Amino acid sequence: MFYFLKGLEIFKIIYIVYELMAKKYLFSKYALIGENLDLKQNVKIDIDHNGRIIDISSDDIVENITTIANHQTFLMVPGFINSHIHIGDNFAKELGFNKELGEVVAPPFGLKHKLLRQTPEDIKIIGIQNAVKEMLSNGITFFIDFREGGVEGINLLKKVLIDSSINYLILGRFMDESEIDPVFESADGIGLSSYKQINAKNKQYLTSAKKKFKKSIACHCAEKTRNVSLINEMFNDDLVDIIIHGTKFVNNDLEKIMQKGKSLVLCPRCNGYFGVGFPPINEILNLKVPISLGTDNLMVNNIDLFEEIRYFYRISRVLCNYNKELIISSKDLLKMVTINAARNFNLDEEFGSISKGRYADFFLIDLSDPNLFSSKLDSDNIYDLITQRTKSENIKKTYIKGDLVFEKN
Image (cartoon, rainbow, N blue to C red; front, top):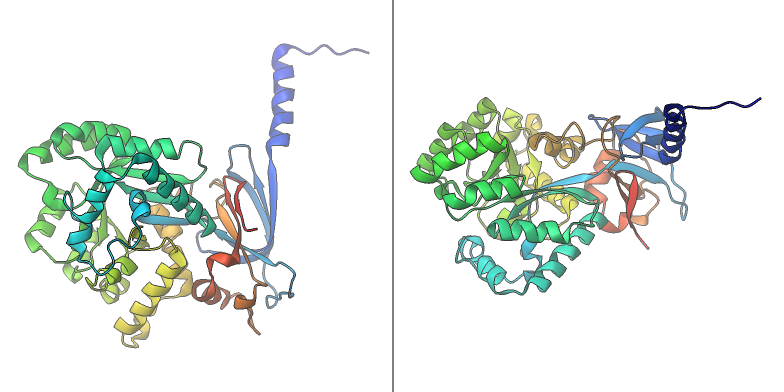
């Protein structure tokens, strides 16, 4: 007996076969699952051909975690999101050592900006490419870049990353109001070096362009000094969605962030590098401000978010003065570079956790590595071990959209 299929039926069969072939299945002995980063074991992740997670099966932890020497025991961790970075200055590492903040980064005559203008494009490209490699080896699968150089700088980064799998947002800069629309159009938003950049004339252009393009504006604020009038103007204008640094913020400033639904990104190690102080961690923890973390300028700070977590934790321990109500958990530290970061940039429907519907972005840590050995390891202290002990060499594989993008040799 012969069956004759119509074109539509043939197409459906081909499509079903393609769907089955396109699925991927990844397994990890342990994984941090969902928005609460719950530890599960025997975790199987089903991924569709677009790189999204379509199903997760796992078992609850019923006993202590055990590892065997010289036998890999993988823990799957959601891909980290670097909430603030200047990737373009990676070619100029440590050229700002022992120099003042403004001397190095203040536009347009800071050392960084002079070097960006003077350095050949091919050197800047190599710097960006190496930064991406370093991020992937550190479990960073998404970064938010403050892009210098207007549309030209935006296009350079896009050109370098055209074949890269890493996720990113570009927040561009403008010199005058004539560049506002082109930068908004080319980038994912605007990244202001300071609210001083806003005046009566360009404020109108910026307000109009933001409504037109429906994109976000981020701004460095109160990194070295607290200019009260400038801060009040920024909040009153309500143009800025994401605030970077806030090192000199006081409780009143943080309350306004919460009231107005703004996002706050901290870069504590870079603040320390320039000697400008520590973020107001007690006030942040007391108000439960959902912060995320960034590593800032690559010319002065390395790209390791585990180091950022540890630095933040140690500062918090000093500043909280043994107030147990202000002690931060290791799980909350991890959320700063995953869950919180995704929410702060409105990415949480697709990124930030290992959850159904989100992209399969994660990395694998080998718990059997010598520096991670512990005589007792359970579903509580595993988070402490991850935040306080993990090094880049413990990260064996990084996946983006289910594809292996980094593997340690």
